[in-house]
Length: 342
Image 1 (cartoon, rainbow, N blue to C red):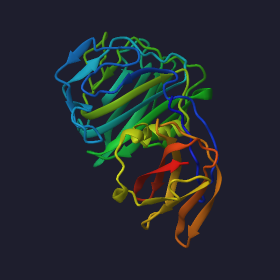
Image 2: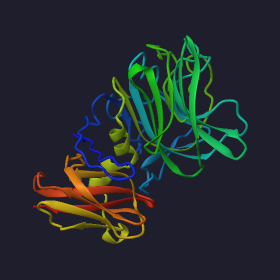
Image 3: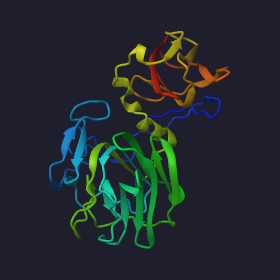
């Protein structure tokens, strides 16, 4: 079980303990897209393969680790994965390479409805891209039902870059859109609106079956699509996916790439986390065991220079003996470190 702990920070870092649910809880579909279009949870397989979706290099540089689409291909899985009135979260990695210029519709890496072709019209959810302004591309989360106009939340992004997107419907019908773990837009559905639709679920375009031909073909790469129903992910869980923390335990860690020092190492009582370059802490600090599970630690102390927080000391005396990972957000990106508790 992969739980999530986040040691939240504001201008100064504050350490606390918080344990989340498993990132497998309420996961109804997971498409790793690592050479196969199949869902490994509900065992969904494409009912239609349109064109020639391919496999290509993923965000880690692994060959055949993601699905690529050429603007003329997609997979459709039939009338599945309706969200009705439930809470839900959809998370995916995506890189857009080009876009249909001056289109009135979006180009969709993932869609289930939100079209006038559906029954009810506009009902469903989808995620797409469009060039709303010259030289500007926006990623958009869309929500619809038969008694309310289509809601669209968007945020500017860039061609050729990997982004993690999370779309949720939470308590009180609150809608949220995260890009790389950061909340960029929020909205509200009218209470208890039903998002179910007869339109088929698809990856790579908007399949409008059984009513109309497909539209909104996507050009780019999609990876690690996760669909949760019955709950929405917490901020800490969104961070875990957006920071790729589920892969930390299997990723080689090279000291000369870190800019991070952990001392003493091995540690018995306290652990000091120092940034070795000019970077400062800018975001979450997470501690995980070798299985990728977040672990709680108690309050520590800060080391602050004239230019900002550069070090953090935490109490690790309560941790079981073993190996742990530390993941730190800085001005220049994430850095990883490993320490041993004795």
